[in-house]
Image (cartoon, rainbow, N blue to C red):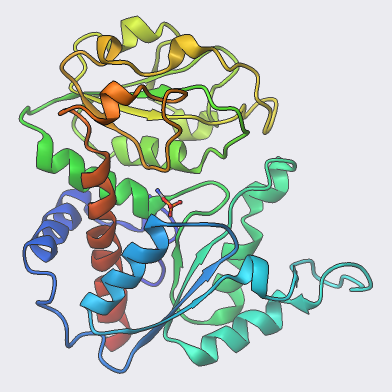
Length: 314
Ligand code: CP
């Protein structure tokens, strides 16, 4: 594997989940693998889990870690070819990526969607710019369209809690006051395409995700119907894809409650707005897996870094 940019970079999800669970049982078993190797973590956006868990994963593998809040501390980057740079951008991705690559062996990047220009967001200029010019492995720590480290952690969490051959898993939209990206939902759907499960997506009309991502998935606009007999309910807000980046609806009837959840396990990537996205009673109750999901972020990052380090060693 050369890069970890999307779920497509996983050759066998069950095998990766099994290996990640083995790393969780004995996190320091490959401590020598990353000796004398450095990872740069570049954040164009805020983070708690991704920043700490990826750092922890790298440390478990014996790597050195350099973290930079690029969005607030780095030069504003230009991505266009042939641009006359007489406006707000100070440095071109061509130089920046090559320079970063001199300081590390792997670069991991977080760069969210703008939610103002769908075409530009889908072009993934930051991730693809580093991939094109850095010449070292690139890890996606949440881009405009995907959050594959989160989805891999979610797969680990599902495996740890599933007791059925074919569980029912529901991805349910929830209200939120701000326009949020589609990345987590997209990667969760892509990950569920690789699972043996009865998978249903539910959201109000107007909130359909990119049809290329949801192709083949069951979509049910009636949330109560979708939630019937669910084993796992993954709740997430996203803004409209069709009316790109717009908040069309803040209907509180979509907030997850114990009554809606029933006996199902509750999942969310965090951070989460209490009593908007989900009621306190769910987050504080026995069926919430959110802290376990956050813990599994370390092992999803660790399996990815382990595979990249193995590739580097040839
Ligand atoms: N779930 C997740 O990516 O959390 P952070 O945004 O805090 O990194």
